[in-house]
Image (cartoon, rainbow, N blue to C red; front, side, top):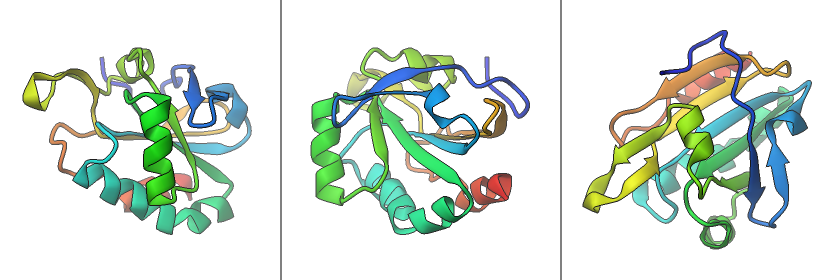
Length: 153
């Protein structure tokens, strides 16, 4: 079932690239942009996350944090973060529970890979309520960054 604006955001506890546990509750009283992406080191994912990286100041200026989540291991995400010089947390949903809770998972992806995060964007306010939800069916599409910023405004 798809999450929609006004729904309570599913709680999560995931490990970042420094092996530190990050939870939704860590962002209480702040807006949080949650980006799900299929796989590190792929073209569209790199474009998406580098777009956020280059614009991170605009998110910080409006008291918003950003996390990006994929089913990659924390180790491969660490290498990806380092290579792309990403300035926000990448979280490993290796067990696919968070991607599933947000309705952001492909049963079947390319090359017969199963259980890969769908490219998706959510804005969650400081109370844990969803203010924006976009789940993309086509992995080469990018989220609507203008709509994300509008939800944060």
